[in-house]
Length: 220
Image (cartoon, rainbow, N blue to C red; front, side, top):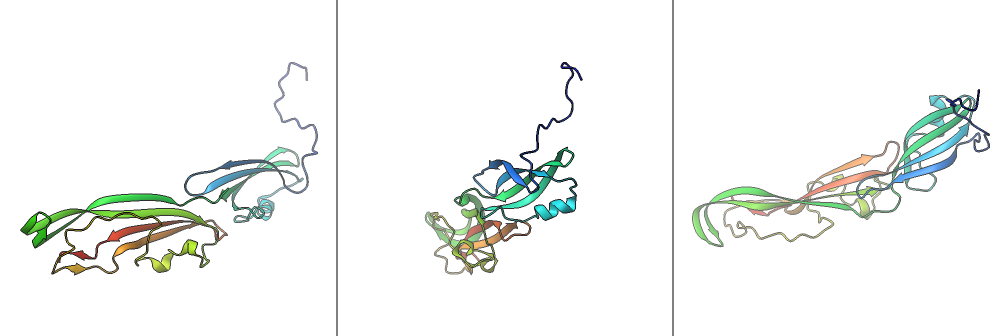
């Protein structure tokens, strides 16, 4: 090979950085305002043979990274030269505790009734479009099976009156003073649904809760 020839293969001047156990040489985090953060850690490893089964034993899905809040979700090995490996392990979790993410929505709820007194008079038939308020929140939990306050809005409370984590002023309804009405129970802020995106093999989860404001009276 002359000095003008292009080298087409990987040159390794020594294997000092390659041990027989995985050694972390690079970390690339990605931190988001909502949901999971991600972390890619590159490990070096010197091993003559390496199979998928060997990798599964080294980095099982769901394994926690030391005492940090990261859990293995995928593994990608790369053979540099005979017996010398770079292994990129992808983790999900969070770098720091993050605040809950809140989304507030409002849509018009349509109702109608007869012989109704409104702030502008009494009418034989009234049809309204009143604000239907919704709140959705998402947050990360280390142990979704625990009974801590952080997970107080889990599945046992779906369909019940639960105060959302933020306060919103609800305008008074024109139906508040009905003599004949349909009574709604529960009413107020009701937890309508909850979802848990659990990392495989762990109790860590991204939780999403959805609330809706249910008025106590509507025309019947």
